[in-house]
View (tube, rainbow, N blue to C red):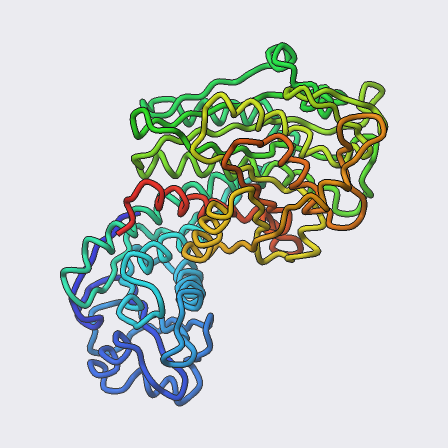
Length: 498
């Protein structure tokens, strides 16, 4: 996508479509007022007839508007004047992008950037725009036969700015938003692929392709033999029942010399049957999304590489299938982790933590400035937070607050959950150092506490994305979250935000 800025009025720019807004009670946004003046009341006339709605998320495409140079005008509802927030801005620009994507428009001028948006600035308005447009234009077509429908021809997005001094921030926001949108799209694509295609080996090949031709990005892949040599008995216990070989994918982005890296660890269970603790049949197809943690950290490093950030970032992905068979791990089996700690596997469907604990131990060798694991880990987190917010747990208050603040700024929100000895006590085992489940109460937290047993001395956080990684129902598909949240953490850490 190409981006540009302009101080031209909405009525004077010759583009295929211009986006303007209308508030409640007949108040027009800056761009809409200009077009209304140039067209001698065309916008107000449509508002009075009810053809244009002021409700946030409603959009009307007008054509043949007299007195202006644009072929089309997308008028989007902005809600109450004075209460237009970044969240509502993103809803509005998404609605406009959805409507425009159904047309043949190749160039667009966004005049919503002229509106007063609470607690934001030109950088974030441009970034939210690029991310929203990328989200709208994404299509999963890889597995469909026959002639594929052509996507939107949109190639160019302009941002109306009030003064030339806003141009640099706006273009930086668009550049970052474009990079994040690319990472989100990659995470979605990996998540949406079926498990017979997106195997651990497929994830490994994808990671290697990302590194090809990028001098700052490298990828290596460890085999089961190498993992066995390292003592990753916990990870290998999950893959024991599958014919698909497990992979440990290790990616390095070097953008900041010898600085300590941030490490992202992503759960990569490419299909989760539950193993011997077999899941119920309904909706089991959605267990192809159990690798969305892996997809999101791979998407994040792809975004970082595209944005060329001055930071060191490592990504570690333990990739496995969890299948039932005569060789599968059984409830009651005891396995030894890479850390040397033993684990009684009371439930083979609590497998994500079994692969993550060895990946976390492996990541110690990088001496990380911070380590964040990302996982579709527990149904309990879905019960607690629904599909709206990612669960955030950490052994460091400052890191937890950093991630929470990043989610707020990125419009990819999380919510803090506790850790504590009273929850860790639920993991007690009579036969091993710990059990892999802690009973029915506080399941999301006890899962975090389990991982915490492998992160002593590290600045660590755990993100449970079980509720946010994908959508069910008619709009079933991977969401690409939390790529925006993670990208915001990294942007803030390397000091490139305006």
